[in-house]
Structures are given as C-alpha cells and as structure tokens.
Image: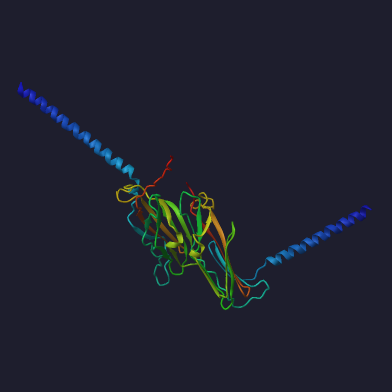
Length: 179
Length: 192
C-alpha cells in the first residue's frame, strides 16, 4: 500500500513537472516578437514589428514613428503640476491604411488613441492634445536624477491595416517641484 | 576779547559743518544700501549672451562641426488679466540644430535658476519648440511697480536656455525679461 502511494505521488510529481515545462516553453514562444527594424540612442528605442501571424515583408511599409521633442514643462512653479507633450506625432503606412496610434505613459496607461479613417498616414500636432498630459512634477531626484523631478517612460505605438506595428520607447524628465 | 569770542564761534561752526557732512554721508550710504535690498531683481538683469561650449571632434576635412546657437526670439512677459498679479513668460519659439551627423539630446529652460521645461530629443538632428507648445507660458509673479528698479514695470527674471547634442557640444542663451507691474486686487464682500 505504501509503495503504491509512493508510486502515485512520484507519477503526479513527474506529470506536474512535465506540464510546467510545457507551459514555460509555450510562454517563451509567445514572447518572441518578429522585430524587423530596431534603433537605439541613449534611453530612446524605436522598432518596427511584423504581424502576429508571422508574415514578414522584405520591405515593411510602415515607417518609424516621428515623435520629436518630448517635453515636460511646469507652468507654475508653485504647483506640483507638469504637462507632457510632443511637438507632433507622425507615421506613414502607405499604401496600407493606418489603424491606430496610441500614446501611453507607462506609469498611467494609455492617454491618447488616434484612429485612422481611410488614411495612409497620420499627423497629430501638439495642440491637438490641449496643454498636454498632466502629471506630477515630483520632488527633486524623484526620477533618479537630482536635477530633475519625476521621470516618465512612454510608449507610442502605431498599427496599420497590414498588421505591421511601429513603436517608440523613451523617457521624459520633468522639472522638480520644490516649493 | 571780541577776537577770542569770534574764534570760539568759528571753531563751533567748523565742528558743526564737519559733523553735518559726516552725518550726511552716513545717511546717503544707508539709503543707497537700503535701495539695493528692496530691489533684488535689479540683480536679475542679465545682459543677453549666447555661447557654444564643449570639445568638438574634427571631421575628415579638418573642420570642427558645431552645434548652432539657440534661436530664442521675443522673450515676453505678459499680463493676461490685470489685478491678478499673475504674469507669464514665453518665447515665439526655441530652435537649435546639432552638428552634422549628431542628434540633439535635450534643451532645457530655467527661469531664476528654477528648471521649468525639459525637451528631450528623439532621433532628431534639430529641435523646434513653438511658443504654443508651452501654453500659456511660465507663470511668474508680475511684481509691484519699481520692483526691478524701473517704476513703470514690475519684476525682472533671468533665464537660461541650454541645449546638448550627442557630439558632446552644448549651447546656451542667457538673458532677462521684465514683466508688467501688477498687484493682486482683493474684493471683499459688502456685508449689510
């Protein structure tokens, strides 16, 4: 009886180990992305990704997203209130259509989503976002640099009708709030 | 006797004159130093200056590439609503371009030694920040008439705009801007 229960326990443990291995292998597979083009510069990174179904064109149509001059400014130094904005956001997917472009402040979530409407490119100027996205400026050094306040990592993603994706990853530092 | 008396009066007169001159000097010096203390922003007046600094790497043709001067025209301090004492500082635009083959890392705006804006470059060889991007501008206190030494205007603020590029060079503009004078008006309710 004791030998039987020992065998059952051993079989159960072996089975569980095998299943967990399968899960790890599957998880690794789903994390792999088909990145067609990637560039880095300091803390900035931009990349273009192939569709999820594995189709990878030799010449991807979607371009890098243009998102110059990521800005964090503090209108009033007496308030812990800063605004993040970009000069403009632009991406070209011709001849495919643009589906969406989203702006995500990683600490907050998606703060803007612009939809394409039978358009092959997308241009979103700074004044389309009002004053920008309000965030806390943060105490001096809060973002790791004593000269600045909070640091906000951001991700800008664009997707076209062929399933291609483009993404920009960066960080913007805010002026410190030091009343 | 009369001669001795007049000598005495003459000595008293000379002593009185000397005392008055010493007292006058003390009073005038005190007034000048007090005036200096009550107008701290007069020290904020910074003569416009722009500079490029850093060590540039020479190119194959022997030319040293250079980051541009920062273009920051029309520094303005405006008072949108009289009676609030709230003014805003802004520029028409800010523009800088990096050396050939380099990118702009950042451009910052500081007013009275307080960092107010950080513009981060993203794979870009030049940076253009239109005035409308930092609407309504940087809020400051307008200041009372004469707070900068001129009775017709208010406070004066110094500013520094700095830009850095990937080649190790940096560019900076120094200047000051004077605001209109304005004081906050407080209206008390009429209780009958």
